[in-house]
Length: 265
Image 1 (tube, rainbow, N blue to C red):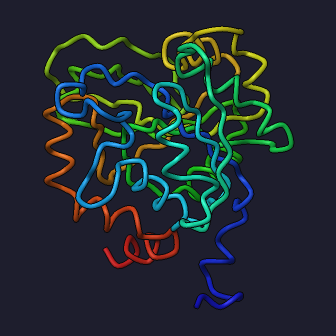
Image 2 (image 1 turned 30 degrees about the vertical axis):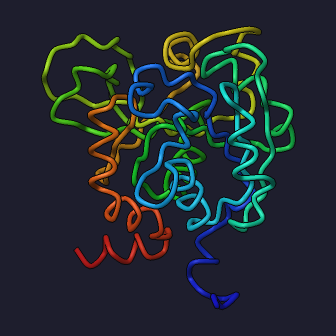
C-alpha cells in the first residue's frame, strides 16, 4: 500500500479536481461494428474503452468523475454505478437531447461550481499524459483553458491547433482532409470555472463554437508525446483493440511512475 509520505502523494495537489467525461455521442460511424451499445462501452480487450479511461484517471489520483451521458445513457450508468468497484466517485449528467460537447459541459456545470478548475475529456479517445503536469501547466499560465495536444504524422481527419509564443494557442483550423503532419487537439482540456459563462445554452461544440472565442482570454496548449488513439471509425477501433496491452500499460502508469520513467530516458 502506498505510504502517506510517498512522492506520488506529494505530487498530487490536484486530487479534488473533478473530471467531466463526454460519453453522450451517437457514435454513428462505429455503428457497423458496435451496434448494441454506446461507443464508450465498445470492448477493448476484456474491458470497455470507457473503463480504460476510468483506470487512467484513478491511477493518477483523479477520483471524482462526472459522466455526461446521452445516447443509451442507461447502459453506462448500469455498468459503472457510483464507481465503487473502481474506487472512484461517479455522478451523472444526462442530456435529454443532443447538446454537443460544449452543451454537455454546461449542463454538467452544477457538479463543478465549487471547483476553481476542472478537466473535460472526450470519452472516445485515449491520450497518454501526466494529468498533474497538465493541471500545473494550466494554473501557471493563468488562462481560461488549456489543451493537451499531440503532433501526428497524418492530421487529415482532425482539426489542427496553431501555437505561438509561450505555448499560447493563436488559431484553430478545421480539418482539411489533407494527409500531412500537424498538431491536433488530444481531447483533454483543463478549464477555469469561468468558462461555463462563455458557453451558450443549448447545443454547441467546444471545438467549433467555444474555444475559438476564448483565444483572447488565454488558451494554452501542452504538447504530449505518448500514445494517442480514438475509436471514432471502425479502422481506428480495430487498431485500439490490437493495441490493448500497450493502452492498458499506459493507462495504469501513475504520474510519479511516469515522471521517473521520463527521467530515466
